[in-house]
Length: 161
Image (cartoon, rainbow, N blue to C red; front, side, top):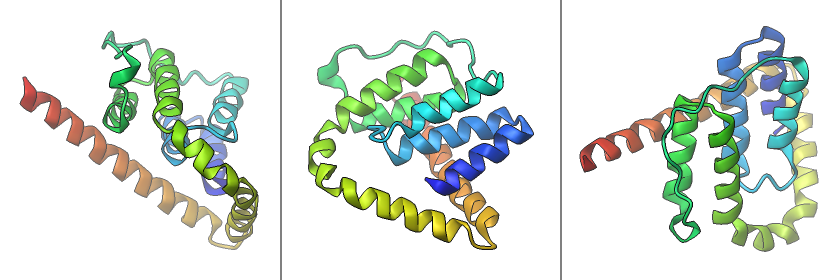
């Protein structure tokens, strides 16, 4: 996530709330389990600057029945987070992600040693001349994916009504 960190730092410097939210959304997409606490660290980093990224909750209800939590519901929450970045939705999204993807935690725990080498490789690649453009391209791609997910779930929701 070295490139996302660079993007987050740049967004914080610019005090660009939209970019900050996008960077945090990228953290959630990349690691729904927040295995290494990067998403929470990113939020704490932003809050330490005094920048308010939170919106008032729009009142849309959450599914509290954990048996109904699945990848589709998690994706819906991510899409909704793009249109209403409330603390409540953020924390619920994190909770659902940890529940839905908990099977990956044990499956990938053997890969944890690889995580550090991958991060190291990412940081080495990211330290090259084109660090900024590479980071921007990755985040731009994630924003496009998130936007597509938002549109997909909004259309799916509207069709059901």
